[in-house]
Length: 418
Image (cartoon, rainbow, N blue to C red):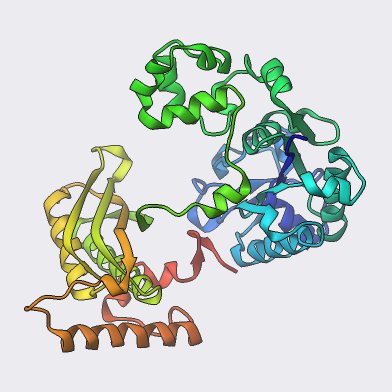
């Protein structure tokens, strides 16, 4: 028997949560989730199906909504959305073991249902409908479901076919995929093919999955390298990985990054201040997780794309989580690659090649007492923040007019938390 997977998506999740909180129907209520204090250029994180029915696109900006359309504006409340997502996940656990659930995002997950069809004496369509009804009856959140014989087919069934199905359920096995999706356009509707990849495929006159599935593989490998294997397999409806495979995967190298879009254009020295704030928060994350890093990376985007972004990385030749050392490395990289006469709007930093703190580099010149004192200070700061909140303890630089930490500590994922 083929494996069967559900891919469940909570429709227009943020907007649906706001409607549920107000006891409104998102299919008849015009509501957008956006922060109006950011002006008419603010991005709508979600809009209700009622607004989509009027031809308004999701992720639009406020000024793009026609002036004759009346709507409710809801401030983003990320903590609330995370709580809804957690509670819905707990509902899934009523039916399925956690080992068979793969959380893909705050509003989407995969579930392998193969063994549960016999357990519940039910077919895959009825099982999907039962879950959808349960989510709606308890949380007033509508869902769409894609069902497939592998993870890729389930995702494509959700993204392409479910939205056109009366019951909001799509199904694809290998034969149906070849029949219905091989000639589907545009390619960007297909999971894993964004605008950049699509443009590169067009260079080789590839406008359909059929063409991608039958072209000389060497052309794809030459264009995309090893990632070409994934594109070719997906074009043929093949996805060998299971949920267990994904959960068992251990990367050869670890890293983490953070980035922010600044509230306004920043001058060189003001952007350097923000960089220092970001580095300190990153170091605290290293210490909290008892790890060290062996490299750093920096990305700086300029205002209105008037100059291509500056980016660079640096191998440390040591493993460390010292704030003093890492701060100096990042500052040096900033001075080396960043243009000092162009307004800055984006900053991203990365800590590369992360390993356990037992690999921390020591040599004859290491000042153990100084490094231990510094680490203890960061641990104390972390304890205070965990107990009293992120803004419970701040440095003088965090109080400067162009600093962003105090504001960003009130956000989740760059959006209003409460």
